[in-house]
Amino acid sequence: MNCTAKKGGTSLRFPLCRRSGVTLVELLAVLLICGVLFGGVSLSLYPVLYGPPSRETVKREGKYAAAWLQRIFYKAMLSGRSFSLYVASPSVPKRSFKVVWADPHEEEIYRGNDRIWFTNRSASPKWCVFSPKWNTLSPALTIEINASPDRRRPLHYIIISPYCRVSYRDTPPKD
Image 1 (cartoon, rainbow, N blue to C red):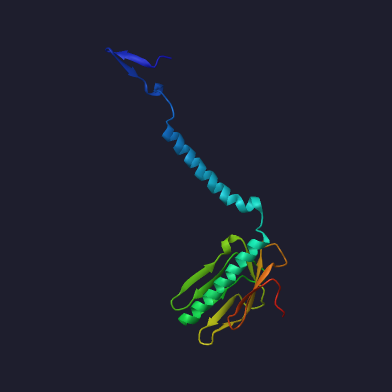
Image 2: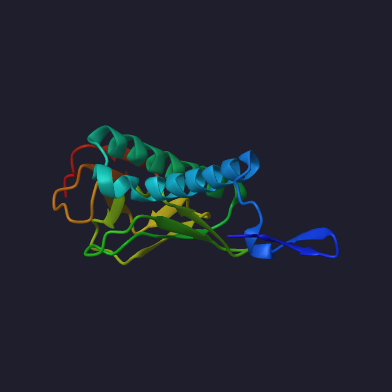
């Protein structure tokens, strides 16, 4: 195919017949975009491909949750602020639990890196209230920790006494 035409002694190129090729910069840009997309997809599929976390991971994340709760109680005692603690109902495991502070209204949420599930083992309502005047949590509660929402037997327990003592156990509390 002839891509040039002569007009008055000068040669003209047609737009569709330009020399096509890929420069090194274009190739590197495409490889970078593909790498970022593949990395994002592989990170999002990691839990699906590798299954539930190990017992050690669940234990470590449960200890982090217990330490976080203990920090919340210390913060409340030092500041004299009350808060409400929301944990999932006994029949519905959740990946997080939250604290709603009073005066001023703020929220703090513990998510556990989406590796563990929390369930309220107590028959009490979902909300527990901390009173700074008496340094008590009413009602006290036990949080079950699992690797998946389908497991019936919990792996670990976080027990919070009425006097805001947080303990982490492998065995359930005696009723």
